[in-house]
Amino acid sequence: MKKVAIVMGSDSDLGTMRKAVEKLKSLEIPVEVRILSAHRTPEACAAFARSAQAEGFGAIIAAAGKAAHLAGAIAANTLLPVIGVPVKSSTLDGLDALLSTVQMPSGIPVATVAIDGAENAAILAAQVLAVSDAALAGRLAEMRRQMRQAAEEKDRKVRAEFAQE
Image (cartoon, rainbow, N blue to C red):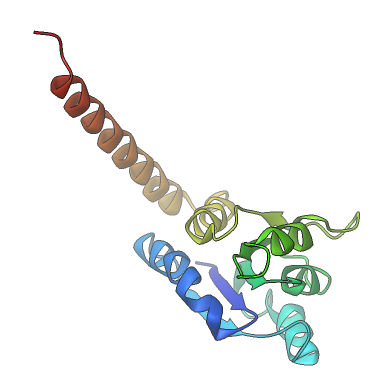
């Protein structure tokens, strides 16, 4: 099975990215977590991206705040799908990171989830891997079934609470 890399620009992003790690593990996807910076460790960042496919990764999730160039720097150095997670910062509430992540030049795409959308990034990475992994596709289908079941139960409860007598 292919593994997923979660790369962060700083350990301050770890609180946000724990949700991605937990979701990937719950789907039985091997995950490796790294701290690499597009600005502070650009050589290490590029080397990681260039070797990721050969190291058995099938997707990379890159999280960063503020200027948020990490996902783009990684995407420029790999053919693997890169999913960017803009991280909310105190400066502009993550809008700066969102725009830095989503506004990539033609030819170097980065899929981008919501600000602090780590769990959706993990699910998207799992969906990418599931294209060639039937067992993982089954686990994703089961996850969706459980989500639907939980929503239906909440609907039943609220309808019962507010039912006309």
